[in-house]
Amino acid sequence: MLPYLVLCREDSPQREHSLRGVFNGLRYIVRTGNQWRFMPGDLPPWTVVYQQTQRWIRAGVFEIVVDDLRSLLRVFAGRNMQPTAMILDSRTVQSTPESGARAGYDGAKRRKGSKVHAAVDTLGNLLALHVTPATEQDRAQVDRLAEEVQRITEQNVEIGYVDQGYTGEDAANAAGKHGIQLEVIKHTEAKRGFVLLPRRWVVERSFAWAARFRRLARDYERLSNSLAGYHYFAFAWLMLAQIVKITHASQ
Image (cartoon, rainbow, N blue to C red):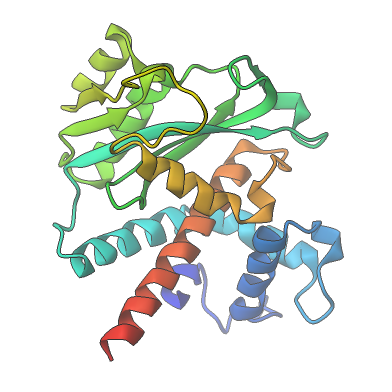
């Protein structure tokens, strides 16, 4: 991870704390969901960790890490480095007083908060993600997600699997503009309780992985880019753990 995290020389005179310690501080916050000011004493001061985290987020460090780790995992799984299919979905994260100023109301889920819109490959690894108020419609985000996915996969994705929240010509045209055909996975019968849908369950599992990080259980962030950045960080952590497991199993 070190090459990704070094935004300036490690021996820079202004550096007082090790990058490893700062990184561990961020891991502690995202995993436990604790408040910044309650950072344990054996980690760098919370102000140092927070400021460095914002620098990493603004530099897109965790997006780059996710992109590289996803390619490695696909190669280890015997897949092409870049996917040809993606799965789109969103999750609504309950607002808190800190995020309330930008929160919206999701009428379908009867919840006030923010929506995390994500695209994953068929293995469940993150491709692209962004945050909006919960009032925003899923189908309105197809253009942005499709554009970002095609950029990072070098125009390789051909099909996108979605649920019925993405139906309509607007969503299909937005995806088609980027060379992607949307396929809506519908329920074969009236939904009663949890129904496992083909293809669609993969992105639900990805959201379940992210929800294990307590900082992501609710929207505690004043800035939407912080919430998005912590999601990228969580997926980078999950993907790195998979690579470590694969590496140990092959030895």
